[in-house]
Length: 76
Image 1 (cartoon, one colour):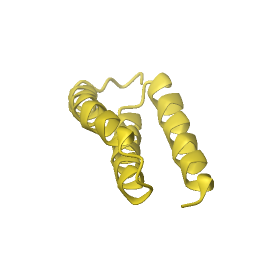
Image 2 (image 1 turned 120 degrees about the horizontal axis):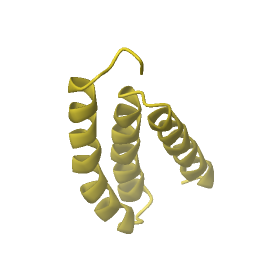
Image 3 (image 1 turned 30 degrees about the vertical axis):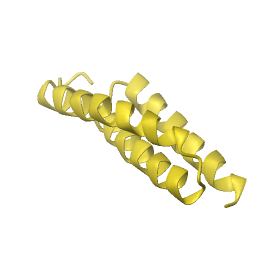
Image 4 (image 1 turned 180 degrees about the horizontal axis):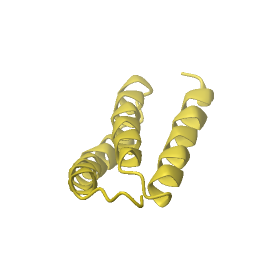
């Protein structure tokens, strides 16, 4: 598998972090999708260490997405 995939996934992760930093709830959705894609990437590329990262980050991002979406404020 090309190393460009890992660079692309990292770019999506950075964009998601940027969006969260701008206090947009949907940034957590970007990060959630990205961590799931990292899980797929780890299986396809046989780099199984990334699976554990996905297992730990996915619930965190899901929780934050739900919490932020329910607490949206007009000023954000």
